[in-house]
Image (tube, rainbow, N blue to C red; front, side, top):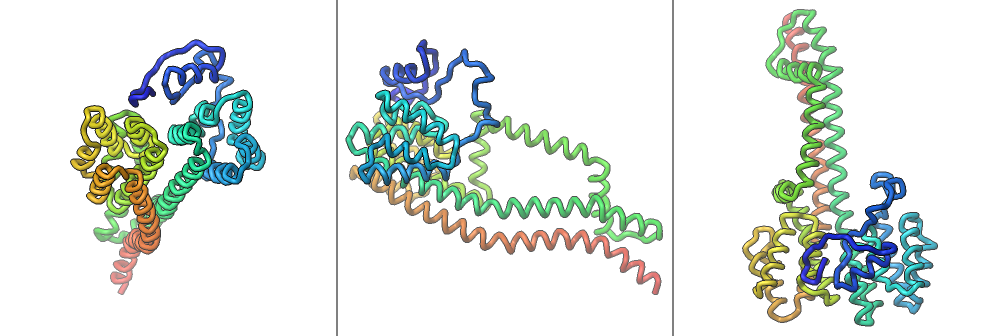
Length: 395
């Protein structure tokens, strides 16, 4: 990525990846992805087999490193200590390579940039800003705080989603089990007795017959739907469409929306406070905000700045940014305190996401129990209705 925020692709001849990365940086290009085209597939990390560094482990690394460096421990020694006590083998391997690079004269930001799967662009830019300004201890503390808050917000949203997902899977399996094994057994007995089935029972029996007779078609259709959705999401327009409608999902759409605004505010605040150029900030934030619909608006903001206009107009016209966000950013732009305003917005939305996630967990639990009770109760009632008819005929 060049200084204007545009992405560049190409080839460069070099002895190894580290020298290639240094040559690109000397041309004022930020390395987003770098690979050796002649490398054998057998020597590469296979995506689904190679272990990844978990977010909580990376967040812990940031805090430990910031604490030790602020206490006066040499940066290389601090990284060595963190690497020795880390329980993550992938993180330990990456840190070992970084230590070797730094001992050979490479800066921390440059060494970290060679491992984009672990150290994202936000981390690299902020560390580089700290090295250039001589305030690396302050920047490490800011990085640690940013990743901690982002991780906590993400975990809150995840915890609010896990219970409904598990309950919905359980409800689905219970209903399918009853439809495939319980309903046919009872209906066979009633049919042999010549009992006339009431309407609710006939509806349940029809659904059961469809599941029994066409389960393979239903399963194939579900697989096709999942594969098609995954492929559609990989396309640029597909991801934008899915993310746009994701924000409109009842209840959870609001939670995801607030989470995206919190991530936007926190990342923007951190990069702006690190004196990263505005065009690069908007390019980076558009990629890490986690929602393509909001990301496109941020790219429009970048276009406005390139044209000499205010960054506020695109978000003012957009429905994805609440009025409070627009007005506080406008005030920050006027007074030159944009990073302060964004920091306050990030604190507010992170707190709001946590409270909303807690409320959702408290409300969804009884709601899903009611849904499960109604679903199972309807099937049981449909099964029992012919028994009542049979008893009346016997009387």
